[in-house]
Length: 189
Image 1 (tube, rainbow, N blue to C red):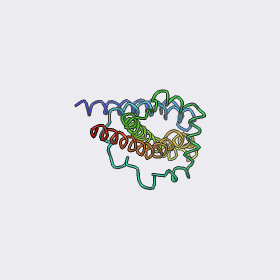
Image 2 (image 1 turned 90 degrees about the vertical axis):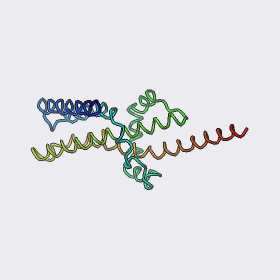
Image 3 (image 1 turned 120 degrees about the horizontal axis):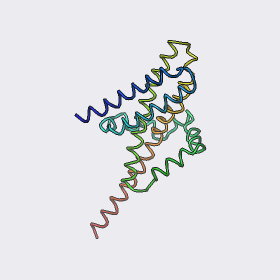
Image 4 (image 1 turned 180 degrees about the vertical axis):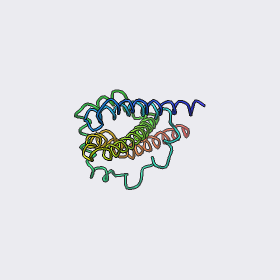
């Protein structure tokens, strides 16, 4: 019962708070686009913490064309990464989640990339829907702030998680192999 009730409650709260935001602000304003993205980030981050099954989907497996990261580099992912360093997000993130060189820490980091991607993907789809609604009910250019913030706050973070995941997986495999070798040596001796 709790598995259904809590996510349903979060969805209802998200809809209610979004409707309040829609009724209290002009939907084509910069402030609305900013507020909507952060409101959705708040609720969706809570929602993703309640979800685990969706994170095992085939979608999260790195594809062969993603392994080297060239696809994402063509879309400016390295520039986005530099932007995160400049604004201090990278430092804040490393402070909250220090990187350790253990299999357990890397496995946790891998799970975090999936949760982050899932959250940003949900928000991206919601904001795309809101952008379409604004464009239809008004003028297409009235959805410009929604589109710009959606790309910066949601699309690029999804691309970043897809870019980072193969590297984390490779590091995890190397550490697991090394731990296995050490364990094999200790059992032989």
